[in-house]
Amino acid sequence: MNNLLTGFVDVSVGSRNVSTHTNRATPPRPINESAMDLNSNAAVYPGQVVTVHILETHNQESSALKVATKWKHHLYSIHSATDVDAISDTVESVFEAVTQLGPTSVDLRGVASNSVNAEHLVAVLRATNASKDLIPGWKHALGEAPAALRRAGLDPEEVLVGLIV
Image 1 (cartoon, rainbow, N blue to C red):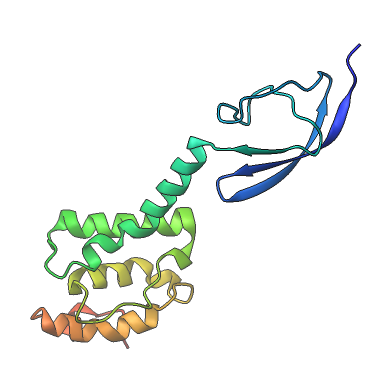
Image 2: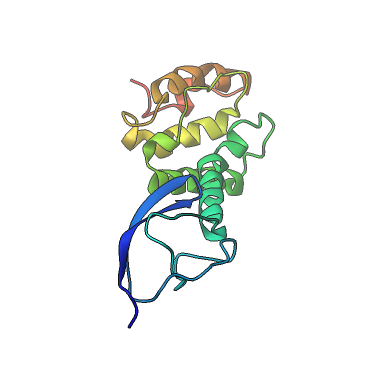
């Protein structure tokens, strides 16, 4: 009868290290580490360090990075389109980032009036107004908006109605 193996196995998944408890009724056998995934039935020795590279984890990290930066595309392109589709894309991207990664993912601390598209900045400010106290740099970005709007030939008092008191 097979010996029962019980112990801990350290597994590296992307940038995370996970210790998992093993309770295997099969004897350990050599495994191909590059082909192993978390759902495999490959046995490992208790205490053995196994490095697991999972494409899915990489894809999830890559997807999170895309979500975290997509909203910046139009914002930091001064000459970006300002039609309804472009503004909608920015707003949808902001909502996606806040929903999936939290309000701190929309970091506005680096906003400068001379390096942003004024209309997209106002769209981001309006989209995040309800969470403005949780958005890093929101008040700073609001302070930069009037100069950006004037540079674009727009009246800040008219465009920022409801955002400024």
